[in-house]
Length: 88
Image (cartoon, rainbow, N blue to C red):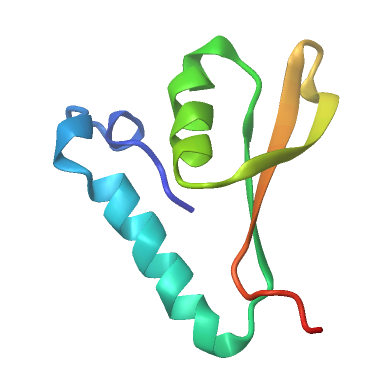
């Protein structure tokens, strides 16, 4: 789970790049485990627009949108990124 600093009560500092570093570290860490795809779940609420843009910036694609998953009007959005190339 990767939460924003606001969720933890600390000020947001997007220019520092901690979230990106953590995400890249996670991707690098799971490669030796033959992890093919990473999935990330977030929300459709407008307050998570920046979050969804963040994942897109790092190469994640929206692969699922489940309407009203959490409650009416509050959908689940799933992003995915292939970590290991397809076996040919």
